[in-house]
Image (cartoon, rainbow, N blue to C red; front, side, top):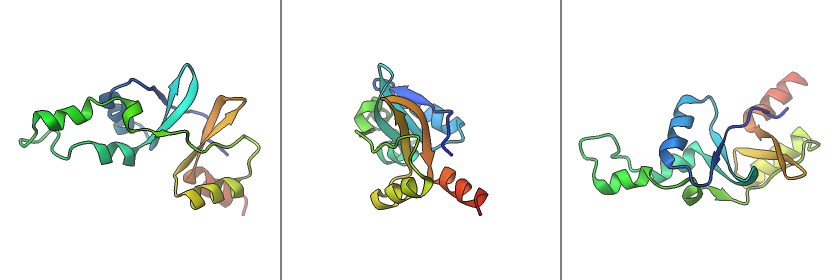
Length: 129
């Protein structure tokens, strides 16, 4: 029930890249990797929280522009909670609810297999009614 099409960014990618991907994608989380190993997660919320609201406006200053030039590793959530492919939908949803998070990377032997979001959970529950 996970999403297997996972989009990743590198730890040193600038937030301009992260923003571009999130602005044009249909997803809300990016996995941050280094040498194909999961290092963190960036959500749309994380990105919006760190960017200046004045970007792209007449009030934009050099300091505002500097916010978009940060690197992914500067705003990511480090050492995110993860699940194995065998995790049940109920258990995954409980982990997400208890930790107030919107997704769980799915790893097997350290390799990224997918990502489980609350939308995946709702879809699974509706399909099994």
